[in-house]
Image (cartoon, rainbow, N blue to C red):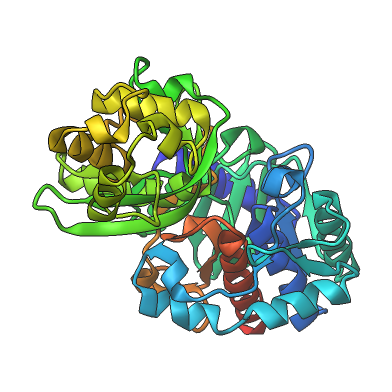
Length: 425
């Protein structure tokens, strides 16, 4: 037995506190777990531990401070990481209609926006957090914070959940520690170390839903603030299309951001791990193909190239695309050579982006990687390798698109974990 294990054993032996269920992490998944565990078995002693002085920081900053609670259409195709079939089995246990009803019962009415995103009618994330905290308190669950959990030690008959504050003995433990995105909110990734110490595999971790960076001298970095609907595609070095997203794309001083970039980012980053020559290509005019754009350019007559592009794109972007293709923006259509038309068409519809990296976990909205679902019993979210341990939320190798999908995974997986942990024993 290691010295650290001996220390924590002594702490647990001397601690007076004991719980039927200890939930580690009081974010979205942890609070949801606590609510459903408490509702399922009101007589059980349930404790919720978190290292933060103020709970729910990530909920409060989500959706620009409005908290995008879920999306009106959620299915497994919106997620990556573990197999979609496994993700689907969990999602169907607590679907969007049930999520909407759950929050309405807490007094949080959700409204649907044109994009399909569902926000609280108040447009305030605090409405969501307050409702979850109130519902947790109503069940009698004890919220203990700041109590950072440093380790969870498997013992005969249960676990010792320990930190510098002492230890709690628990029959069952739920890990709802979150991932590594926005570490200032408390998501520092320590939950993965705990899961690994209990026998779990951790699939490679990297930022998801994260802005991408371009060379400092790339023309996009001079177009800060310009936003257009564009198509982003990832191609392997062999030319196979790996992923494609169309949506709002924002030019910034460091590169590119916006919903389409955030959605494509995890696929690009993942592909580059195995194929350094993977390409990210942007189509600034998704309605056009190189061929159709070439035909339109050939029929311009006295209209200038820039004049034509400005009908569909912001002025500065139109001028920059002319420069990138090596064509004078003032050149009239009838003077364009075939090679000029081809250069413009490729710059507008098939531009390769020389990505230099991403903005990291500090700016990522989710974490890719984590505990694979094939190590978890999908009907209960109980670990297959460590009985009486449950996992839910971002610690699992499941990450979704932007738009409330990751919150839906948190609500769903936490519901399953909370109910199952409470029913056991």
